Length: 284
Length: 115
Image 1 (cartoon, each protein chain N blue to C red):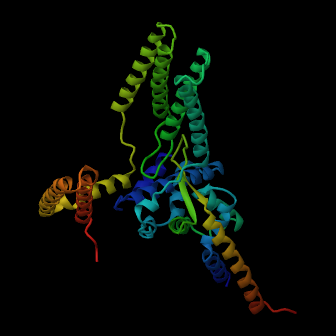
Image 2 (tube, each protein chain N blue to C red):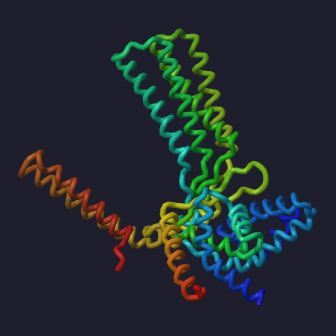
């Protein structure tokens, strides 16, 4: 299998490694592996199989030249998987229901036995923990999926912290004090896990997303590009607010408090509209 | 002449690459090599549609919103890029098949002598 990677790298030498090209290369890699496995199972030795698979592929440059220049967002769009959406909705409903039970109990409308309250806390903590871990396992348009271990680490940390908060509430509600040890252990464990995961977290963004964010960072907004516009906006704001305050004082004297505050609201609105107009000048 | 008639058939087939890919994906989501193999087996093992043609077709279809792609989570080997047909893709497929049937009948009546 090493041959196929070498041959693929050779085929792609000199090609500008844009995100689209790398994406194509990864796609081709998996397909070549499948073709090589097929050739090998029909008795070809692995080197010959690799060379034949690459030959069948033909000229990579012609392929790269055909890559459409689509908008990167559309080209890289990933839809959520239906099963994931269903799981998340169901678990969120469970968590919300358990939380609603706890709140109803908390305001005194429901007198739950301690065991039932503990079950509700467990339901909230577990379901939200699973939702977090599951969400991190998903590939999105801008992020690669997290590895299963790391994603479940985040899920466990979330569940632990939520369980700690819930158990803390149970203690407030009348559970014996020794249970506070569990609260502390769960909370510290969860926070330590979050800290460890956060400190060792590496980038999950896809190459194209990073390129885009660099691109936007270069562009900046109008005020960083054009300091004069920012200065103008400052003067406009001053004038608008002085007029608004004067109008406020005059209206307070003439009409009283009931109406005068509208002058300040009007001043604020005019300022926001000026801000919007200056940040995003109309294009003709 | 055999060579020429093969080229003629291959040309005809290539002209319908997008519809053929949609037809394969209509049976369920699939990845590059599997799609290629399905087409190759259907043409009796001849390599009439090249893999390179298929890669271009996937990208075209995806840009037009007729298929969508996602990466599989294979634990060993490279990750596969899977394709799935969209509702728009199904509609285009139906339309193209209807157009093909109509055209096929026309060509049959023009090219094939009836006794």
